[in-house]
Length: 112
Image 1 (tube, rainbow, N blue to C red):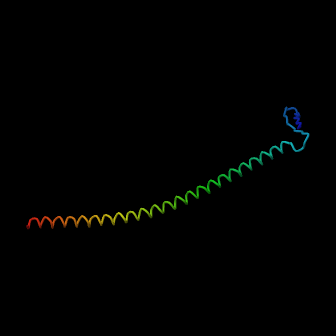
Image 2: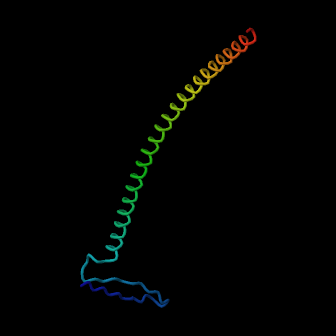
């Protein structure tokens, strides 16, 4: 078991104190704990960076997918607009023909 003893050392008349750490096992010094904390912080930072990198990669894929989808939708919109214009032209031609037939029938009726 780790035995840690803290001694307070008196320095001078001003009453300043410093703390000295003594351990049974030299691996368990405060510097070791600070090193472990630093290692844990670095490991956590690296993990966060990896998660961030993964999230950015996912967002880039979503962005590319949306860009492709947007391009396809714009193309589809242009095709539908052209089809609509064609249908409007056909509708106008059909209406003109029907009106012409109605006028001919009316004129035939009057002539008879």
